Image 1 (cartoon, helix red, strand yellow):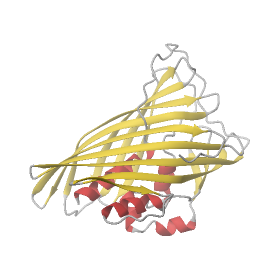
Image 2 (spheres, helix red, strand yellow):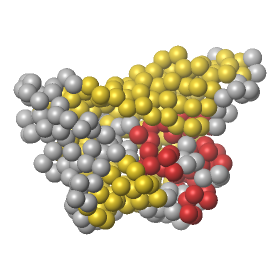
Image 3 (cartoon, rainbow, N blue to C red):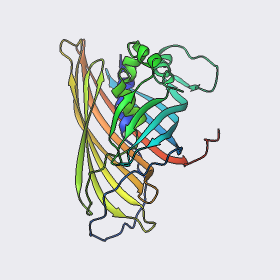
Image 4 (tube, rainbow, N blue to C red):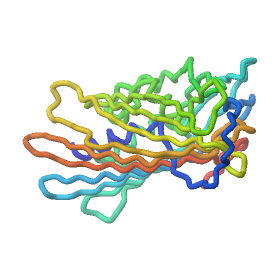
Length: 311
């Protein structure tokens, strides 16, 4: 159960991202025009998303540590731009590479969706929860502020939502897939922003043991010397367990900080990220297990207009 719980925890972070160190922000306190995404018909955006999840557990006096790292190639294709600036887009995960540590072994488990090699055991559940998304195009309309609507999910993918892998991965609905495809994005306020101005977003993720709720508080931090707009983020997470679970789970601490870098001229995010820490206690069969989860996620624009070159 301990390893599976770690897998559940990582599905929360389908909507958060990267700690990058860009300093020397502009001290200009005048309000900037509303930040907006700028779409172009035929535009192709390719992003590289790196995630690392480190889980530490103390069970009956024994400490265990597991690490899962993944690299995703994400793409967005703009099909049509409407007069109001919104756009019909197709989002997809083009490739997934995963590495996971094995308790008691120095050899890492590896998976590459471009490879025909098979994986077995509990690692196969992790792989299946994500590999089902590879190559599937999710259609949606995005507003200039970043809001999504009219999401269309391919029927083959919908048919897989009820599978155990989808349940474990937190991708058991169109909403869950939309969150994953929109990682690293921000929904901006429809108004001019002043340095220090805040806004928030609340998100939920349904998991087998209950609901995970995330509160993200954004703060506009002004311009960098390069003219990019920096948005800081603070996150907090809570858990609402389902009733009649065979175990009890309690969040004792949750804190996270992130940064987004936005290019207003091109109307897109260049890089974004999050560093998130959670501490939990799990009581089952009279045993109290303490668990800490550290998540580091980084995303960057790889190539704005050309097809992604395989590495």
